[in-house]
Amino acid sequence: MSLATILKRDERGVAAVEMALALPVLVTMIYGIFQVGLLYQANAGMQHALGEGARYATLCIKVGNECTVPADTAIKARMTSKLFGKGDGAFTVSDPVPGTGFRDLSVSYTKRMNFIFFPGPTITLNRAKRAYIVDTSPAPAP
Image (cartoon, rainbow, N blue to C red; front, side):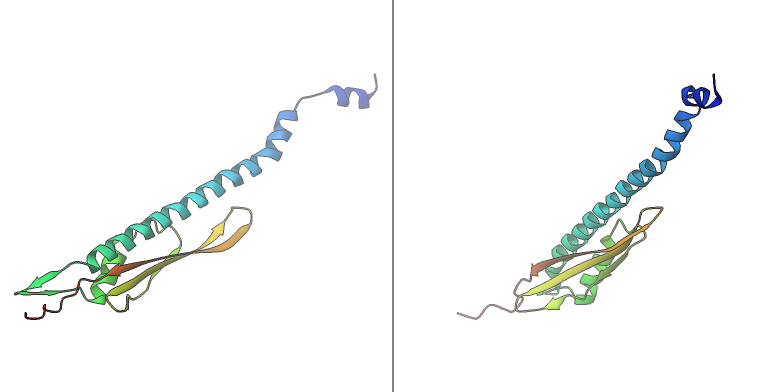
């Protein structure tokens, strides 16, 4: 028997070669799923912060006999304190935009995706919510 025939029939080490080819792809895919999970977590944190900010913005804070709405800085601080899921991305909480009877609240999240062996795209998530403010002006006298 020739040496070429012996080497063709020898299957020792085939599993190691297959593992060397398949393992980097498998690890990259699992890490990619983890990265997408972090995006979902950040999205949930943004929604939670917006909900808390909107709820806080609609509160009537009693000062004596008068009802006042929270200041924009207090609303922004409340939203910032309720964010979760930061990971290695960056959150931006915008100042509430005053309007006629409402405040527009918004949060954005930017993250550069990383797939171990190659960099991914930069993803930006934007969420906004409108909080309607209670009219605090006194009712007209009859």
